[in-house]
Amino acid sequence: MAFTEAQVKRLDGKLDAKHVKTREVQDAVLTYVEGWHVIAEANRIFGYDAWDRQTLSPRCVWSGMTGKQHAASYIAKVRIIVRAGSIAITREGCGSGEGKAASPGEAHELALKAAETDATKRALATFGNPFGLALYDRELAGVRNRKALDVATSSPKGPIAWDLRNDKGEKAQRFERPDAFTQALEEAMSGAADIEHLFALWEQNVETVRALNRHLKRERKNSDLVQSLVAHLKACAIALAKTPDESDRSPVPESSHGKPNGQTRNGHPSCKIDKSELLIGEPKRQRSKDHLRYVGRQPCLICGRAPSHAHHIRFAQPRGLALKVSDEFTVPLCAIHHNQNHATGDERKWWERHGIDPLPVARDLWRETQAQPDIDLAQCRFGQQTNRSHYWRLPGGLGAGANNAHSGLRLS
Image (cartoon, rainbow, N blue to C red):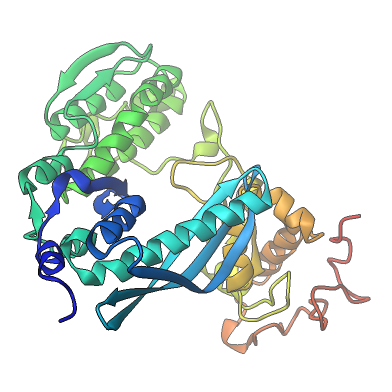
């Protein structure tokens, strides 16, 4: 081996825990070493003039707008060449990076630099623990002072105590167990005098409920507690929204901890709520799998590809907690344009850039499936409908035929 004895000793050494950073991604804690540290280690071990870095085939895989900022994503391959005596050792690594900035040039620069740094770390990691190879081992045996790292990665990111607040936002009680918090919140919702107080109580505690849900998922514990809270909120709301005569027959439900199987007082089962009938009404969110399948068999509104995805127009209805808009507000988009649409921050502007108003299309599609509930989807070919001759597919993009019912979709 052409490496010196001192270099081999350093490459066989352990990675100090003080150089390891952590970040939380989708409720998981990831460990990594920063790019500057990896380059500094290469200079220290190999020498400032004994190694080279070459960036190969950088490529922009996506660019667009995210909200009011320009954004870009890059992938890159980096080649590391280390000169050890009379031989040259070559290693390669691939990486990706994203960037957001006020100008397109700055966004592309940030994304490319991030991709180069990521690829550099992957290439240098093959030389040993000092460059981050130790982090690929679940036991972290190649990390010095592992206890400090264990404390950092195991420390809870959410609250260790759960505060119950009243409808005015004041702390009423603190609980150390999630089940005790959910039981107390259910009892408080059952005791709400009217629907305004019920919604105010939920609004003051919803952030704690979300944190509780993340905590249960991170700990891989039973997350049915959160689902039971949402179901109990619906049951309480429908009971409070009824007239006095109806309320006498179906009182506000008790906590599910006190009554098993979701029963209310006097044995009345909790019923599904129609939010459009509440005092503070919400729009109905229709669900129809047949309609979604029908929309998915239409050609893409942008390029005409088929089959498509049934895309829910996000601005068609007010946003709900983990709820999509009604299925009646869906239009066909191919996989490429569907991903582009969800990657943009302002969906209205995305449609305007393509010169299309999707709402009339969604309305017409919904009318078709509702007028023909027994439509045979098996006989409906991709991009063609047995009963819909006005749907178009023109070469070179989207257009409208002479008999097209959507001919008014292009925006001036």
